[in-house]
Image (cartoon, rainbow, N blue to C red):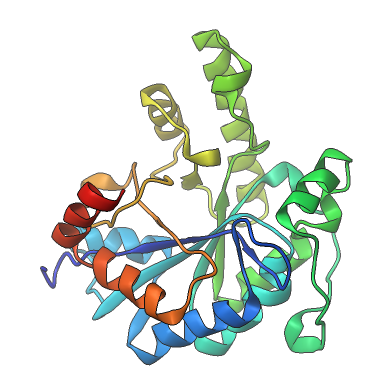
Length: 272
């Protein structure tokens, strides 16, 4: 593995919460995972460092990794953020900008909060009921995490819609997507947050989507496709690794495999 262009595994999380099984990691498991990264010499990198390392413009740490969260759930603030700070692990959160609460700072686990938040299914029901502010991050919480230097924020679109399922007509679908991406980008930039990285809702994209996003200034695009990243040419199709509520041994195994491009390709050939 080249020291100039090392493979960088990108970890994908959603919820960190005491309750819930689907796309959820318990706070205790998440802490063990972050402790493992710290103890074994991993350095969590931000998006600019990620691109710089792959292009050879920035010297790589010995064991780079990227930590990402999709959607912008409140539990990222309550349970994940304190752990990230404790172990010095930077992270990226992709926000669905229409769902971010206008204001408010809620108590965190490092401030004595211990109650579970709604599960993923319960959270989706609350969003459909117009109560997204009860389960999503607020702009005040986003600002505090951004100011800490530990978390950066980018686009998960404005609405999290799968336009390919809603609008059969290609032209109409692309126009809806353009408006969605543009609105999210402008809102994030207005808030002083990242405007050049995008995570596709449910991992769906096609050639039209890639071209549209690039034309709006999105330089890095994150997928749900399994694999690792060792080439700057892949910045429009960044691969990630689903991290569930798994033990330390399974977590270590994933990192070992996906820090090695050849090994990960062989592994995915037989176990995808």
